[in-house]
Length: 127
Image (cartoon, rainbow, N blue to C red; front, side, top):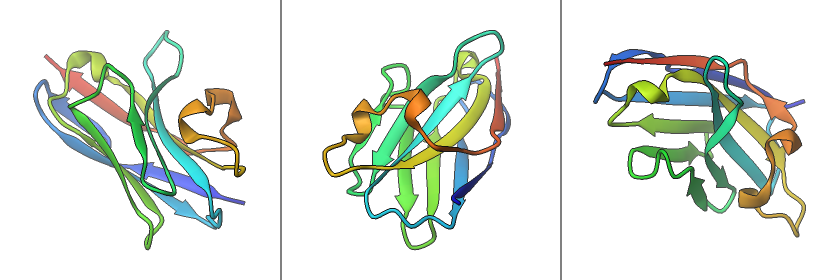
């Protein structure tokens, strides 16, 4: 069973940067989709960025140009670089993963269709 462990969260001032990591163990999918989601208090969990086994990425409009998703496939680590942080980026950040059937596209996978989730890492941005 795949396990995901996030790290790298913290407290920063607006305009600062953080890099989140998500270490995946027992990860053996040949086609996969990995993603970062976030959830602020009182709000629904929302997608932030995702990447598939080919390296194709997609981003929420709210983070385009500020956040970058990447992966180290040799180490099975997913990253999210957060730059130019804003107070509205404050949330618990979760990584998620699932395998992809040959006909599936990572960008079209819904939140509820991700099989595996990490425990989350808190990002707090002060103004």
